[in-house]
Length: 344
Image 1 (cartoon, one colour):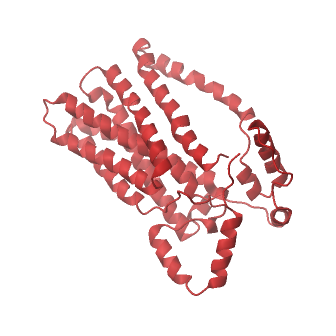
Image 2 (cartoon, one colour; image 1 turned 90 degrees about the vertical axis):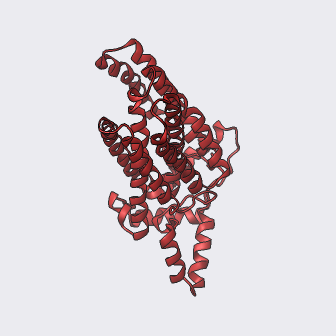
Image 3 (cartoon, rainbow, N blue to C red; image 1 turned 60 degrees about the vertical axis):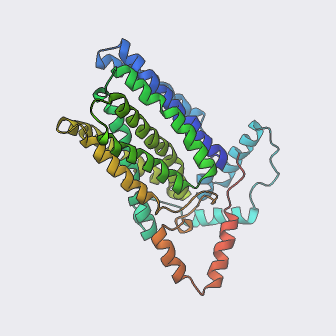
């Protein structure tokens, strides 16, 4: 629904930074409400207010267009133009293109299912890599968050500091997404978080503040990557399965959050073991991230066929398509038709 520049701000300085503010309020609630059932109730009840958003959030125009519902998409775009003080053109969509889309949708209803995420080799590999990426980031993020009681110092202060460090992490994520490629931004943040966590084991046991600082820096890097992964994953999947792709990846993230307490429990055997495991997994994921296609400056794909290829498949496909100028020309024209709008 958002243009490229606004999409980045919304995902980093919008949603995520307010997540950090909520995280910083948590130790304040926990300090005054010591009984865990009452604490859970106190931090859950405000979520009921989110139900009212149903009447305020419009449908995605991209998705409506992919389903041939052109008139509904046009109503939303004109309403957005009015709110933004922009005079919308009399003709928003090319009539020949819209008639073709409506005819195709009436003859053959667009129906996509979750198995479309593994239908072709390219989207299958992308889905597997996304699952690994989200799961590992979630293990590191929640593992460090849940490890707060094991850090030296006051548990409430440490929890607040672990939340406060997320604010500059989201600012860094916003800057990186604006000026650096997605792959290198993600990989760099993960390398930072993973390498710092591996350094914790080298700190002498009497240097408590240094080890706590390194944990904070590790949380900084992983948090920065966590905010980027939402933008990156959404840009890689096509419109027809974008919600499902992000949903499956987010489900993998929840599995990571379920596993994260067991990483913390390993500290009972060796205090350094959780950091070694989380740091190693984070660096491994940073390497995997380098094989993702780059989405910076590229129009959002609308169909599965328009998706960018992962690094290995991209090279193989380019070799197979050599000597077919007609097909190449068709791809260029299709890309120009589906170029991303300026934003509304």
